[in-house]
Image 1: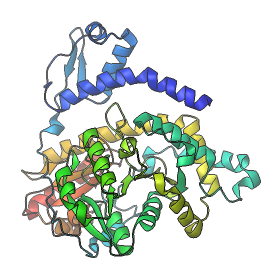
Image 2: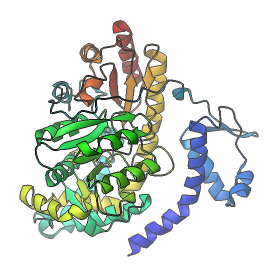
Image 3: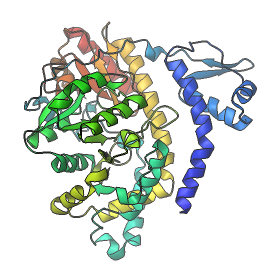
Image 4: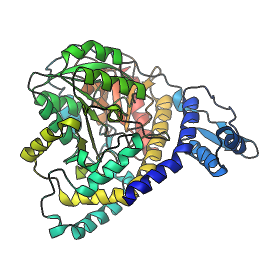
Length: 481
């Protein structure tokens, strides 16, 4: 009970400055406030919003941390020049709206075989570097968990998973309006395990699953391996799937699987009104929505985006997530909140895995409970945002003229679109010879598209060496353009 009260108090206390800072940040990024524009003083902000001095100062500290404003002594606060926004956005995708059984491109295996290679700069693998993770603290938590658990953690967990972990996930759902309880949640062995269980519970071979286009390659591999067809939806690099396109294909699909918050590779984030409409449309047609929110905690703004689950009143949304992209990829700690399908999912878990790793789940649950996860997330988000800005600045400086980049407001992915003449499979082969691994765009579709695109992971620590690697990549792209 204390945890819930404490969390509610914190949310009430910080929400106001987050809300104000987020409004100003949106005006800056949309161009309403332009480089060099002067912002209100601390006192003026207090007067305009009826807030205290400390809250107003937090607003400006937040905006400064995001590199959106600069402070000029004796003059005040001014909007920064955002050079990284000068590159144009990639085109919205326009896939065929015909479902297919196509095998995922063999490039996926080729690229992901590079995992773990220390001789390569792995722009291709979408996880944060170990240098950005709290490894020493996690090791201590694992040790504490072996001492705290009965029989040293050798016994089976309850079928639904570690109680402490589920409780802390439920508490965190308050931040985006999920209002989950620990009883709503089932733990899994990673995020893909959660998605796999949901697909198996909901469909049968021959059913059609609607996804974003471009889409994470692992989703294609999973869906096709289960005998389903894939229907790719047109997707905008800022706002996600085109809702009108979804309306047109509703009679053709059986399941919808989306990554509404900072999906890979585009990094788009669906507006709340789109999420609400999608949830309503699918519920009316009795089409379940599997929502993968694995990147939701990695937001660059002042507030965590809501999940589609926040608008679900009928239990039709199966929310899935994991700590693989924020805390420890190798721990394989995932979870799902499957709504009205909970009993089906519990039966599947009983058959396929029975129990989750006790020690690791206890360690992660305690890491959340102590508040260390939020401290880590704050630093991780700032680092990734600055990485994104540095990457785009390097791309603007070194890549061929006409290059376009996405503008993610969170996540780990940067989508880069070259002119049509650049074959990124050829670019991959050239880059490997320079010890650089990239993810060609053709990996992210089952159709013939995105041949001139790549995805770059921004989860590597920024350095002069990384900047040089991007320069090398840009020079290679110029050679073949």
